[in-house]
Image (cartoon, rainbow, N blue to C red; front, side, top):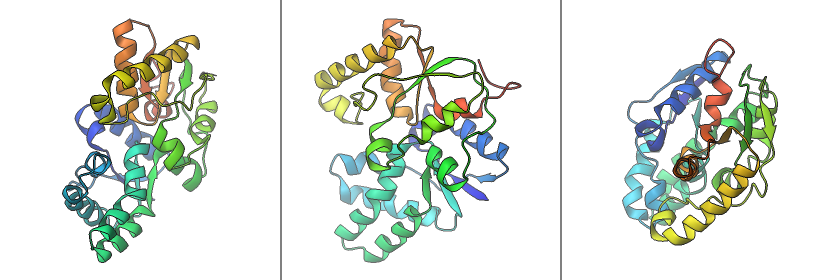
Amino acid sequence: MRIALFVTCLSDTLFPQVGQATTALLERLGHEVVFPQGQTCCGQMHLNTGYQRQALPLVERFADVFADADAIVAPSGSCVGSVRHQHAAVARGLGRSGLAERSNAVAAKTFELCEFLVDVLGVTDVGAYFPHRVTYHPTCHSLRMLRVADKPLRLLRQVRGLNLIELPDAEQCCGFGGTFALKNADTSTAMLADKMTRVLATRAEVLTAGDSSCLMHIGGGLGRLSAGTRTLHIAEILAATETGAGS
C-alpha cells in the first residue's frame, strides 16, 4: 500500500523523530510511505479556538494535497480528529459545499497510526522490541473522538520485552488541551499534577501516548520534578527493534 504521511506541525517542528519512527515502522511492514511536500497545518488550533474562517484555507489545502493518497496516516489522534470531525463541517458551515464533499472523501482515508495498524492492516504484532516498564496514557481526542479504544494497548502487549503497567484513572485528561493550557493555566496545572501523580505511582520507566502534544505537556512536568520517568511516542516504541532503537 502507498501511504501518505501527515506528519503534523508538532512532529515536524519539535519531534521529528516521531515522523521518522512512523515511516520506519510502516516501511518495515512492507508499505511505501510518501511525504506530500505541500502539506501544512490542518487548522486544528484555529478551529478549536473559534477562528473557523481563518482555518478554511488550511482545510482546503489539506483536501488538495492529500486528494490522491491511497491512505493518510498521522501520529496524532488530535489532528486526525480534526480532519475527520471538523473539516467538512467547517467548509459546509461557511458555504463551501464542494469543499465539504472533498474533505469528507479525504477524511474517510485518514487514520491515526494505531487504528491504521489494527483496523486497516490487521496487525497487532509489528515485530517491536522494547525491554522497559511502560505505562500508556490515552489522549482525549484519540479516546473520545476517534474511539481507538484498546488498539494501542493491543499493540503494546505484543512488543517483546515490554512490561505494560496499567495507568490509574488513565482516561482523565492531562490538562493540555492546546490553547486551554495557556488560557486556563491554573486549572491545566492542577490536572497535570493529578496525571503525574498517577504516572509516578506506576513506577514505569516510560510513559507513552499517541499525541506528542500531551507527551510534551506531561513530559515537561515530569522533567521539572526530575522524576526519572521519560515520555516516548508510541510510534517510537513500535518502531524499536533488537538491532535498532530499544534503549
